Image (tube, rainbow, N blue to C red; front, side):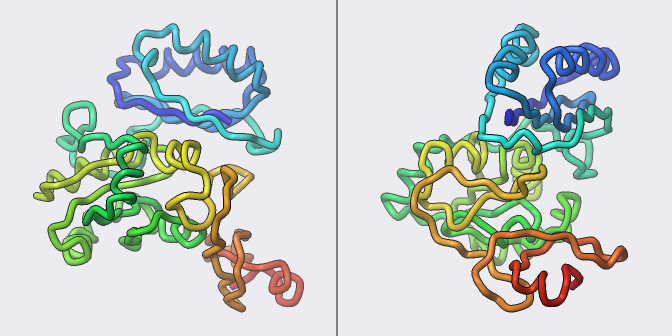
Length: 275
């Protein structure tokens, strides 16, 4: 599974979609891609040979040649099909137009630097910019969960974040980094001074330091739902019904809810997936 993004001006999103789709189909890739005038955000799955051949061709495009590519083990069924859509944003934040990561965003902190922060017990706090249900199955030590159900909710939580960070050094984190580009920029726009973002997101840190400093497992927006990178780790997720340790997500059976939540096999067997 390939995970990558880049904020860069795309003058003709339709043209990029056409060439991108032809290339994906050439190498039998499935996955989800969003293209906008502000850039690209993509997760694709295929064989190692096909994904590497795809990258070799795609990265010839000078606009994307320097993109950071995250790789993880797939199961062949992470995505049902290939989906490529054109949207206004590559992450749906609905922030003001002046929040432009290609112009100004927080400095990128390398995984090695974050490791040093942990080892030296630096006084910092991690603001997890994912949704709360993602936070429940796994997150970094020293993290706070602002309480979002969607990225667009960040502006309503600024005061809460200020209270919980108390002028400490802030590191924003998300799965692969794309959300933090805008989220960290928004914090800076709102007057936060000492703000960084984790380069490559949680994915890059867990690749380099499996089982270290990250509690639990990593939620992912594909059919795997969670993934791990090896190493010894603690299971911190809890079943919503019985509170037993659990890392299995289910969709609520209630159509009006349809939320993802953690629920163990025993509770599903006895009461079904509704919540």
